[in-house]
Length: 84
Image 1 (cartoon, rainbow, N blue to C red):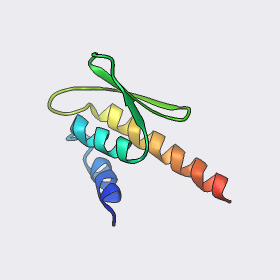
Image 2: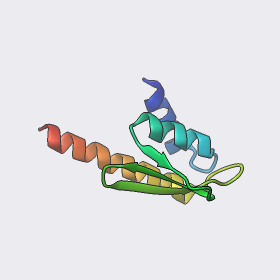
Image 3: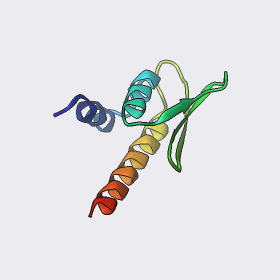
Image 4: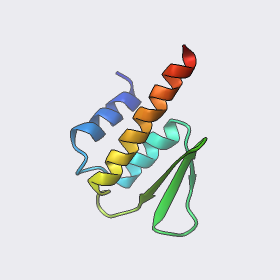
């Protein structure tokens, strides 16, 4: 199991205790570009996929973790369809 897979498994296991830095590391590692203009929210973009994640201390709200996981699942499905 790679580091990315372990990090995603951790998000799925416990979405209530995920730090912003963990989400940021995962998304940047998957090729997302980060844009933050001095606000409390960071935008992560990959093609037409845009995720707007608030920077909360100490943990990101579980609904945003769910949005990240849903977006990553959708991207994986699209990649698998395109590779066939």
